Image (cartoon, rainbow, N blue to C red; front, top):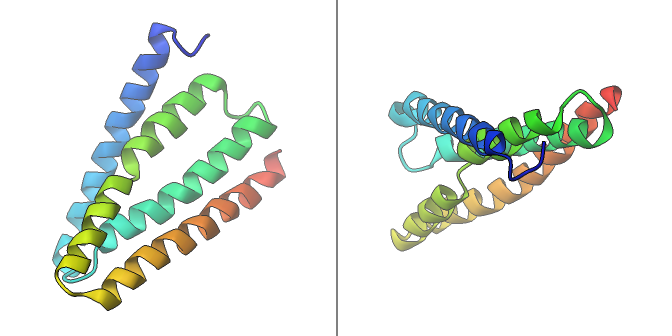
Length: 129
């Protein structure tokens, strides 16, 4: 199936819908416990980075993740689940509010944690590749 096949659009859309709902549920779970620091977005970005690394490695190195599953899971679900735009907005809000410690921790922690999670996902997928 080609990337411009109508089913591809549906796979990405369905995955994106589920990823977005999952992200919303994580936000609800963290909302009462995270004043000051955006733990929900931070957690989603780290988990999403792991998932993208893990699933992409399996898609490239094996037949476990088909091209269709990759569209659904990586492009759709992970694309809807991870929240870079929210990450940037929340970082800017922390900076605007003068919370420079949280601003620095959030931005640096998300970047470093995201890369660590991404490579951990790749390594975790190696036994299947």
